[in-house]
Length: 306
Image (cartoon, rainbow, N blue to C red):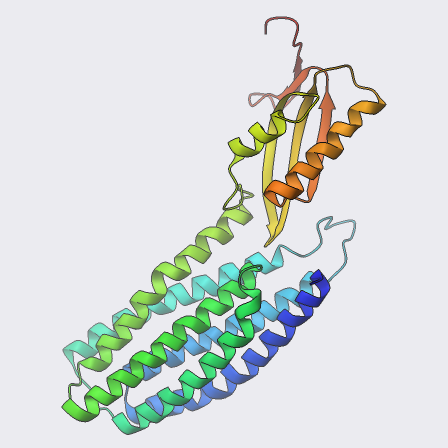
């Protein structure tokens, strides 16, 4: 499937999920207030972050389509990561608020309309399942879609919890179940959103992408015919699935036209084994390293002791 086709699929999925989520959000807020249920209001708060996540994810894709210009030579792809980080951080803060409100409800239980709570929760579960289905295909290849998918997944589990809670309250009149479920939703959200936050920050700091070992890449390049040494190797991501690398490669023989076959071999290796499709490779006959002290490049002969 082409990148453009996948992009269009992600756009359609996000737009459909946003319309569904926003439409139900209004119903859930009204129902949560009427029913007096923290679990339902917590789910509504989570659904609000879902709607925010979805529209920001969609906006990130639209902005990411802007062409490269003289000021932004990598285009606007990084906006996708900013969106994912914002969404995850918003949800992380929401989870803490839910836990605080659950504590207040444990101390002072509120009367709850369990039937209203049940009907709304079942409807919300259906909306969440449909949204998850729409976003499923894009979640493994796009961090932005993954963040939105996790939002909806958490809300789906929250809906299940609200359904169970409403039934228990209806049968047993255990009001403490409601804040317990609300707290459970908050605790489920925290570690999963933290994972997205960490991955987003790693990309913004231009860290080595998850799943790639710098040492393994260096060792593989050193096995390429004609390569004597690789140094100043850097690997980073612009956005999800867009991995870049830059390196200095010392050749075994003096550089000539044939030496540039090494670049082709390295590019083929990086693409096939590490899914790196954009590399800048500098060929050298002696090691030229960047001094950390004065930020100047210095070259060291391989035939003489350094």
